[in-house]
Image (cartoon, rainbow, N blue to C red; front, side, top):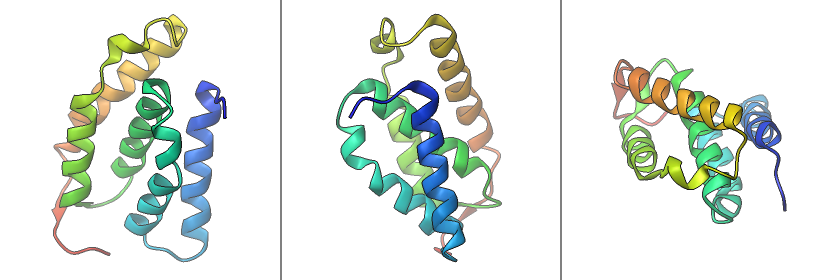
Length: 118
């Protein structure tokens, strides 16, 4: 399936919100959203980058971050090769995605960590 830039962000957020509506905890809802998009992440760097950054943005909305979630996020964020996205995104999208990535990396360090899965 071919995804548009904003469409993929919206789809991940919608799936996360739907899981919350089914009374899942925020951590489980986020995990479910990520697992639903696992196949999409394997399509390429464009899809993987957006999914990981959307995951990070949602994670920042949580009051506490499960330690394994933070480890996963940081590993994936540092593995993203933003230069591979040049030509796959408009300049505006590239700058937006890069700014989102940098904000997540900055803000995730300020989040309290939990070792208890909610």
